[in-house]
Image (cartoon, rainbow, N blue to C red; front, side, top):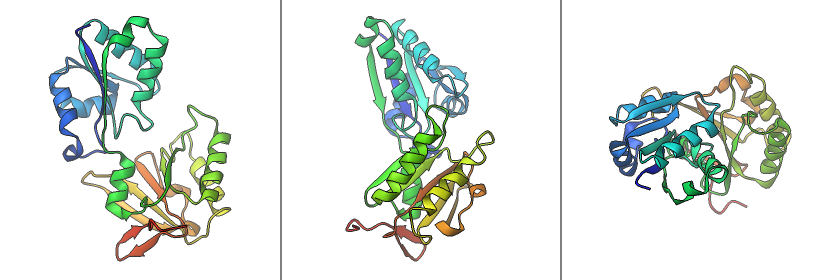
Length: 245
């Protein structure tokens, strides 16, 4: 097969954080597929045919991309951040597994990107400097009960945490519930960091103690980082020491 498929991460928002590898793939692509806002971003870096779609059709989007690649097209499937972190890489491989055997011979590459989690952590200092986990607070693809269990266990285990998709118009109360769960497991002094529009000109960083954090402080453009009992402040920076217990 002469086509190829690149699953590309566009980084957290700034064009300066898009990797050269991804820029090259977009320049060589004949087709770009993805969630509409990401396709619009990619469209500024490519002359490819653009195929925007809704955010809840990941499997269909991945299947369409594989089909185009099998027809000989050079396809870039784009995601924000890194494509392997709550994004399109897993959907592509799910569609590959469900699709024709011939698709498995395709030239498929996953091109990493800088995640919102890592960009936010860098802006804050090093709050993820010790063991940490990332949790998607959206229950679109998994039950909320499982999210609650993971929150409790991660807090009990002493992980710093990064939360994706904390609060949306259709889920206005879940982030407040997440904070309630954390307050039952962690000291109220643990820092909670709200990084909104990470790496963009209107980026904002707000840090409050867990006891003062409220659900209204986050939205879908916010990446939330919760420190640990060992996380420390040094001037305007936060860090979690690697020697933490």
